Length: 396
Image 1: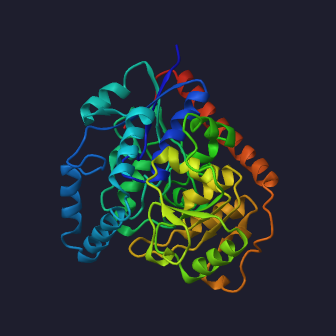
Image 2: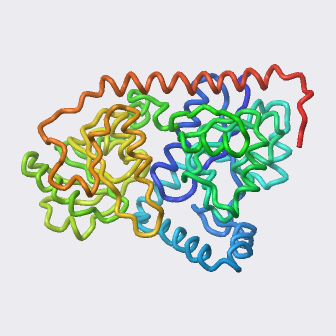
Image 3: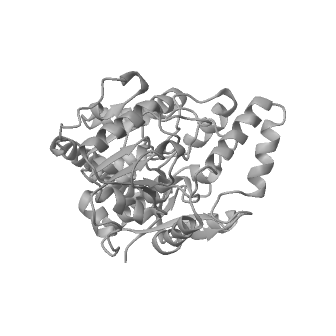
């Protein structure tokens, strides 16, 4: 009988990366020989989103005397509701959660009881920015506070920032000190943990990259191919910059084919011939990248899947409106995979990637295999250690 491993991660919201990293974590743990379950709170006041009464109260109390934090928090929430797609797209996300993620939901006390049972080997948290350093509500579920301390395993979570603001340092230090097994997603995060706890922790790869190209293609194997004609895929989370628009125009001069945009068509695309939007769910998102002739994106996940599926691509600096600039995530990934020349910032005007140059993914694929091995070793060592403990672990 396979041992159960509980996974606590972000899965709500209409976000491709959020949904697919949760799915990738589940499949990867299963492939290691364990029985994974993604767990979460019972539904709050908004279906499809993590909005709970207690969370709202804490947000209000912590921002009441800090108006700047209040408006920043409000802007972040407002930004999260932008470009969520059509009703058809939302339905695809909810179906993905129900049939692919199969979330098991609990109350807090129910979760504490369930995680303490003997048939639960370990509890994982990660990946995504579940440890968002600037979040006004530091959610205890993402630090596995419901679980016995000996079962807590951090699986490549991210702080999302290079430092912890003063108002969160004390509680985050307390929470991360309650782990026996710590890892992180970015080097900057490892530096934060070293500063707060004195511990040196491994930096692990993002879950969607743990699954190789063949596994992702098997995942969408049951789908009918969305488009059989050649097409260029545009995936922009914010309005594309002038640099991006100029590049797309040049690309279309060489590749005279259909243009597909997800999750929406911006006004800036109005002059593009044959540009259509597609109401994609998570699986359709993978399919559209896998079969594209070329991908243009300002998204980390659009970049990561293009690399993993070995599709020609260019990543652009994103035009952020409300959220903090996180382009460094894309740059960091591409540098690690020796593909840094595929990123175009605003400063690169007139110095674009050559459209004639084909990308060789041989080296990046080899690097990915090494990074996958590192994650596998970390998890198997943690699970083995937990299984062999004699029960004399000091609880908080």
